[in-house]
Length: 113
Image 1 (spheres, one colour):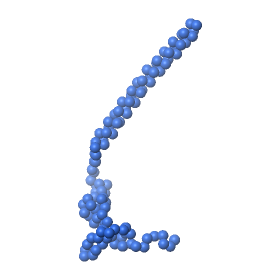
Image 2 (image 1 turned 90 degrees about the horizontal axis):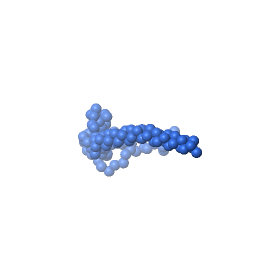
Image 3 (image 1 turned 90 degrees about the vertical axis):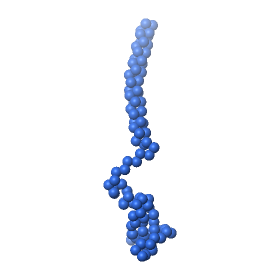
Image 4 (image 1 turned 120 degrees about the vertical axis):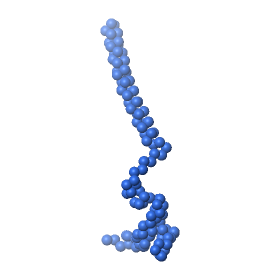
């Protein structure tokens, strides 16, 4: 194994979840200037916005986040796409019918000449 490849400055660090103020004491090399007193000792503090203690996947909470009507916007786009697709399908036979009639009319005029 190559020498000097892995960091050597592992130390005890506290990670604090800002959603529910849960703290985790673990070893890390992360750089931080904040400290926290925990069990009579001072540790470097890293604040995180979400962790396993507050994430819905790990807590079993199902949260439906609908910011600015995302679901409604999606449903509206889907309905508009279906409507446009049906309009295209309806227009194709009409265009084909007009093309066939033009070809028949051209064939009749060519036969008359």
